[in-house]
Length: 415
Figure 1 (cartoon, rainbow, N blue to C red):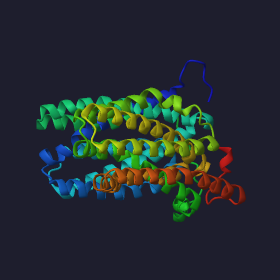
Figure 2 (figure 1 turned 90 degrees about the vertical axis):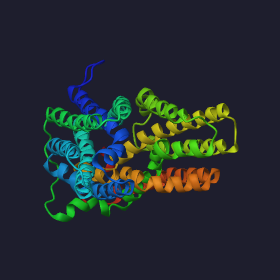
Figure 3 (figure 1 turned 120 degrees about the vertical axis):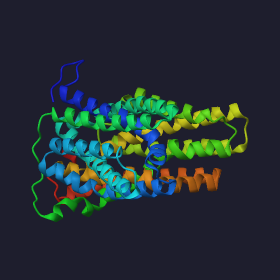
Figure 4 (figure 1 turned 45 degrees about the vertical axis):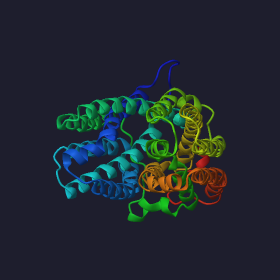
């Protein structure tokens, strides 16, 4: 796609603005949703936890068929419809006051979010030339973090107010954000559907691609880092260290700020599958080092030495996060057949709901139950998954060179 130096093409700007518009609302939603469902909707903590787990479990399964829909019908129209569906699901939370309607709305929300992520990846692949995709994804990730930070601040104001109206305003903001996202995506150039198969089996081609399925599993294990910052570290800091409570907020600001400032720079060195494989492998080594540093804080240092060690561990963690992200993006897109990007990204993206639903249970069991040894076990999981990614990528490349992947339109090397 041609571009003049120093300017950003309009479709790129639209993709960035669409991401910003819904991430601000999401940031506010994330910090207030649990209390909203408890205090305003009137649900118990077990109902909220079980409902969201079931919703995301079902929603993650929707990624493949909805991604397949984006391939066949065109990613722009599918993205717009799914953004509208997400907006409607969030808006419905404003009216819900019982568990069953909550479960239905949460399931629609999770399914629409999973499908929207896949459709937007297919849309990006159709609008951005292959060499620029990882860089564009890095800019989108930086924009996402900026939006989440602004939204979290707005959500904090709602928590401080503590009123029903403040919570309702947050959910209305999130619904409006996805509506704006849909309108912005609607301005992008239409892309024709690329899927050619009409039978029902075609939408599950990715499930028969064993190398890609293995890479999806390995990526899901590496994404177990997601509940660390939001759940495991706060519990660890409070229960196992002498660090003050405000350290939790400081580490969150450090992480989001670093991603906003350095994610694009981290993406510049990843231009193909070999670089992506090295990035993921090295990120797992850094993640192991981060876990080892966090484990040291159980030694019983004073408050300030503990804060210093936690900051060092958080710096290593965010470095690993940025390197894993850019490598994962390149692998997920680079090995997806050109006419099945939505379907493949829908499957590859199941790692996120896996990490967010099962990850908290696994991580808290390891860390809070196992202490310092649990950190080392978790670091070992990251290391094994990261180092296994290289052989899995080479297996995927060989399978594409030796025989067509089901539904593949061209070899992976062409992407």
